[in-house]
Structures are given as structure tokens and as C-alpha cells.
Image (tube, rainbow, N blue to C red; front, side):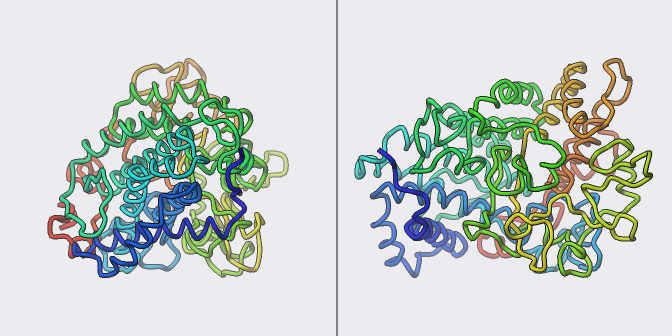
Length: 520
């Protein structure tokens, strides 16, 4: 029997809104620590929820929507990942210049907003609610099977774990909440990040056992259409078994547990093709910088291992929450200057191989290959690697964007595997994995007997391949932890200056929360 169609958008949006309302109301109580003034309304929503398959569907898709909001609001993903000590410079905005220069406690509204973790706790509360309550739907609506519920609970666990990992990278210690909170919200102190990450890892391991390789097809763990949606409509939308292992790989790498990272990434490399044609794969240059069938930035794609799409056809395109808002300008959109750009000298320093297809030099025509950039000969090259306007276009008069907020794809995980192998001393295998990515981009392979510093080569390639994808700052942290040769960065790590300050709104609302010591 088919489940209710995803195309019934009115039902879906109303039900999903119900979950968002529940989370938002609980989130409000997190801020003020008192009985909700709108408790009767909350009670009505809760009473009518968890009754039908529609509630399960809205709960699942609502959680993903909340996570997308958490990482894209005010362009958090890119401001935190790409600016600090990164390759981009700001043209005029003082708040962006403050981030680039590491002045993270400067008094700008956007800095106070992105350092407020309330949106992540909305995700955590919504996932906890689903884990606790969704089993009720199995009893109330026979169309919703225990198998379906087990997979959905696994998704909720994985999303909750991802939210915690994402926050730990930003703030270090954060409050660990493992159950939902209705009405009067109990205040919590921050939990040591090691304990938070241990919880996240345990949740991901549980989820990985249950999650399918893909949805809406013949995967044995969840065969058939998923809520009436076929595999093509679910490409890159939901967390899969490969997604869970990708997050496990990053949780372990963040902690410097590279033997575990090698194990997790090996599972990915051994199994990523099991998506029956709907799973991840390596992408060519046209797909990386365009809107082709494999682009991880345009539409819903199997190449999105962990990411959150913004479908134009579903009305999800927006003017903000996309890197294009910061990077694009004329001739791609009707904006005179971008907010941020990569200077020519930085481009030249990063892309040293003239045959590099991302940015190189045609030795015959003497013309630069610039899939990543436009207007390179000017003082302000435009970063156009990611430029998904409206319905998948790459230029237009209206600055409405549809690009995916991408966390990881197969190339990124291959480079992470190379990093792990290099750290644990498996140099030959590390070179082989690095060369997989280099060969995709026209860059000369590293020779097996090369004496080059392999860690330097891997992180240099991560810099090129993942530019504009929110990785640069976190890569710098891992790189400097491995190398340990930069006194200034070592001091930053020791004094916990690698973490961001906590929003004053969070501290004012909860006296148990104290500011990160580096920013006091």
C-alpha cells in the first residue's frame, strides 16, 4: 500500500508547521525558563499530533527544515566556516571584516545572532520529541509500520547527533539534552564536549545500523516508496547509512581519533555504490561548478551525502541563507560588488598547478581556466563556483538562490580518509586516496615515492576542492593540531580561542551559562 503523497503540499506544510510550532514554543521556554504563556495553544497542537502517518511525515521533514534553518540563518555556515583566517576578504562590511580578523566579540547584530545556539536546540528538541512520541503513530495508524518508524527514529537520532557535533565545533562545551522539554524548561549548564561527542557517536552508531542506503526503492532495510515518494524524489534529501558513517568519520577526526576515522571512511568507500544508482559518486568539473545531473549544489542529488537542499520547485529559494548572497555580483547578478571575494594573489597561491581545471592556465591560448571565478583580470574576482540562481540558472536579474547548504560529499570524505591514513602512517594508501581527487581536477598525481609533506598536500587540496563549502576554518584547526608547528595557532588551541563566543542573549537568559574564557 502506498503512503500518502509528498506532493500534497498543503497537508505537509500544515503538519510540518505543527512540529516547528512545538519546537519553537519549547525553545521560547528555553530562553525564559518559565511556564509558557501560550501553553493552551501548545497543548492543542500536541494533543492533535502523533495520530497519523501525516504526523510522522511532517515530523521527519520538519526536522530537516529546522536543521537547514539552523545552519543557514544569517549565512552562519559560511561566516563561521570560510571567513576566519580563510581565503576570502570583505569589500566593505565591517562585521565580515571582524570575523575574518578574529574579532568575534565585536558588537554587530549578525555576530550576536549567529552565536545564539537556540536554532540548534530547536532541532534537538524536535528530534527528541519524535524519538519519544512517534511510536504512538504506529498504534494509531496501521499505514505507518514499525519498520518505517525504526528508520525514522534513526534519522532523528542522526540529525540530533549532527546538531551536537556542529555546535561542538563552534562553541566547544554545550548543554547536552537527551530528552524533549515541554512547558517549564529546566536550565542546564554546559557539558564537556567529550561527553557530548560520545553521546553523538553512540547515537550515530545506533542510527547507522538501521538507516538504508537509499529511500524509495528496493533497499532491504526500507523497501518501497517512502511516504509515497520514489527514490528520484528523495535523492540527497534524507540521511542514509553513508550519511551516518560520514558523520562518524568527522566526529572521530575532530577528536584526533584517526584510526576510527580510517575505519569509518573505509566503510564508506566499500559501500557507497550500494545506493542502486541513487547514492553518492565522484563528480566532474561541469557538475562541481554547474547545474549538471551530479551537482551537489543544484536540486536534490545523490551526491549530497549530508546537506540541505533548497528546491526552487518547492518554493524554498531565498535571498539569504546561501553563499551566493555574499559572493556574487555583476555580471551574474545586479549587485555592483560582492560582500566577499578571493584576491588574485590568494588564488595564485592556492592553485599552483597550471593544468588545474578549477583554476589554471591554458598553455596554448594563455587564457586562464576559471570555472571557480569570473572577472579574474579585475581587482575583485567573483567567486562563482556555487551560483545556483532561481530555477537552476547561473545568472539573472533577481538574487534568489536555490543552492544546497552542503556539509559533505564523496570528494571531501576521500580527502578526509587520506588525512586519516597519512596520520596513522599508511602513506601509500593516503597518496592513492589523494590522487583520486587530484585526477578529477586535472592536477598532477603525487608519486608513490614522493618525499612531499603529505599532510600539507592533503590540506592544500582540501583548500582548493572545498573552497566556499564552509570547511576552511575547521580544516585549519585539524591541520594545526596535527602539525603543531604554529606557535600562534597552538596558543589559540590551548586557550580555546578556536571556539566562538556565546551570544549575550543566551547568557542573559540562563545564568548557568558562562562565556567562553577566551572571550571574557
